[in-house]
Length: 266
Image (spheres, rainbow, N blue to C red):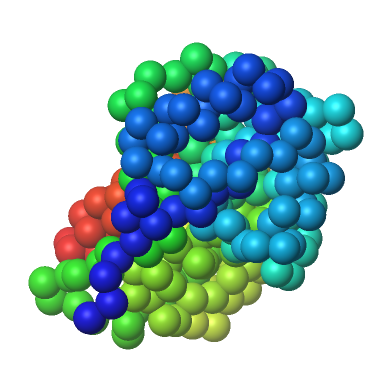
């Protein structure tokens, strides 16, 4: 049996333009047992480092002299060699409009500055769980046989979820870029689970839920809604429409596994 990765095994590229900040973060990484760390002062240097030696994880600030963290993760997701590299934001940025592109691109965690050692350790273990997720084991169903539909207009977020589901043991994963495409698939095929984004063009997540619950031939399929929405009234309307569970971006593999265990064991 192949042993799982540990914190000591991780090779991390840290992208931080401030020398004092980079020293602090490297020191804290050493304190939790991560020693394979290379530092890049900006996005261009980070991409060069990554292409020379693909990292297990990227820890990145939000702003550099040549690009932003959002632009860096977009460049990674558009590079076939780096598209699946896990990305963690380390930043005091808290404006939703600036963070949304990062969330949509499949960020593993957003670690605020300053952070405690335990917060860093927890985020790193969550990263390990994404890189090598535990299989989802159900008492009365075979995960490999289940049909799953993932709906998201962001191809980055879509790929992020598909990669996580495959790591958990799902083999039959179908994708749609908006609610309308998903509705067409649902008309032609039965699914055991639907995972959908909230904000999408043509037909959003709430409209898709209404379609499934009231107009489709599979009204009882479990539906997991994934969203960056913060408006409590809108979230309440999603639940009233028939969403089985809500999940905020960014999310951990452990949280997804726990929710799916509950939804698929019913």
